[in-house]
Image 1 (cartoon, rainbow, N blue to C red):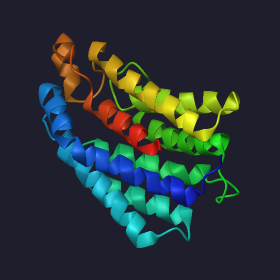
Image 2: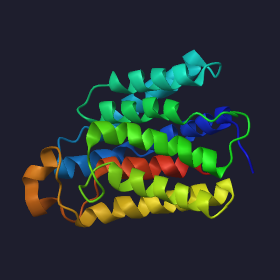
Image 3: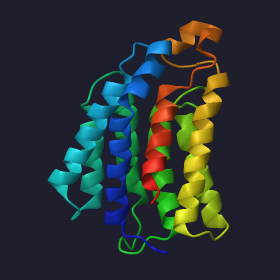
Length: 207
């Protein structure tokens, strides 16, 4: 199965809606370990990114991803906006030659480019209790599925499951970034809100 880049970008709209639908969950998670604003911040981010899709359209994907990134970065609310902004802008480095027929490998490379964009800004590795604990496993699952020759929907489902597992794993991680790092083992038992956001994003990318 192949998918157009336009169709794949439109799947992010489902991801964005899941963020909105779960804003209270994200707020509660952040209130336990931070200042409680992650949920509303993520809603602002996805609203800005979706507005860029509406405004820019699909004539120039590089310009679209830049606009989504700039929108996310303008949302304020600490590090989430810049991190998500770098992800969206990073997608521009993974645009395939054929935007009308992306296979699993092309989608995996696109998402990897977004991850690399965020990683260059964040520097956080898996295990630091950040967004990366869901984003990186999700991208790795896509790349592994592509290498194994799996179809796109199977690959996206495996990426979703990996992201959910990664977010769950943060319940047993000490924080190395942000305000939560000052709480020591008091963060244990509560999932990282940023990683949880990415579990929702990967879920939305599935059919």
